[in-house]
Image: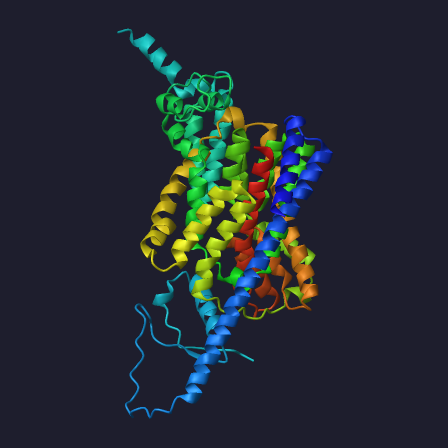
Length: 135
Length: 405
């Protein structure tokens, strides 16, 4: 495919050189259509490559998940010591925790980013108490 | 000392005198244009980081260059004409530029050699998260579709009498990618650089005004209301492999894209690999700012009145707008097709983000989507086509360069 494209591009280059700097309308239409096709072809092939790598990583992830679950099932249950759980450490610059009600983490992050953008304030200077989806 | 004679000499040497001799009045018009561009950049915030520099470069060149006799000019058009003339002894001689050139001539070497646009691309790569594109590779189709304006404007430019090289440089305005437009124009039609760069950056700044009417015209209320599902999470390994795959594939396909795509992907690899934070930070901030300073002012310097004030500039401005509009339309039409094929799961508004102005075009999709449905969050979905557009416009530029160089 790459060879075909190269040959076609060379043919076009020759045509334009032969015609001098000015192109005829027919040549321009041909070059435009071919160029658009090359962009599509390039990105379609890239899309296929990305789908293939994505599928590989998805299957790898699924296998790892299955292995972890199988390990959990086979391993004897270890009684955890009755120690009160330590407070999770906050990220540097964090203003604390936000309670989410029926809102996925990603959407909450986007909402906080949009609010910060609209208010023209850095995100770490804002304190969100809770985010709830109004149904 | 003859005071009168000295005053006369000073007056004759001054720029004020030059305004009233020959085509000096054209410089006055360009000074007005540069003030207008400064107003748009500072007051209206039209791509201020570049437009203020371009406008001031335009001001400086039109205050100091009044034709080939201007020895004190900051930028010399005649030197660059000699540089491009195979019959001249200074053909392709950077030495001659360094010897006889002014400050802006020397800074312009970075544009002419294609260094600044490539370094800007490196910064863009380091600032871009390709995650939305990797999680939804279909976005690449929208990025490809939105290059329609590039090729339609190319065709239009040929119909209006431009040469193939000039038409290719004008068409790339539709890619909505300033560095790519500058890179291609410097290689194919350097005499049009000022007009093309100003048109490209002005239209990029005007995206929130140009795109929404087209988006509303080409989509129905029902289509705009579509709430898209969350994409899958992309692993760190995938993000590291992505720039390597894209660089290998695209550069092998079109070697002429190597400077742009190579730098874009290197910047992105520095961002994602996790062991080069310092480099990623430098490229995103310090280097990007330094190159922006040089790029803006030296591109502005190419707008000397004798070259800029022509019918060609008006044609470029009109064709550039056409290119932008058709690129938006191309993205939206394929977005609509994907809406149909997916059974209404894809919001066609993300198609318009296929023009590569990152992240402005994606933000416009988000705003329009939210107007139709306040619960709509299209930003991350639109970022996929948006970054695909960067790759698409680099491929389009690579194709045009391969054909016309």
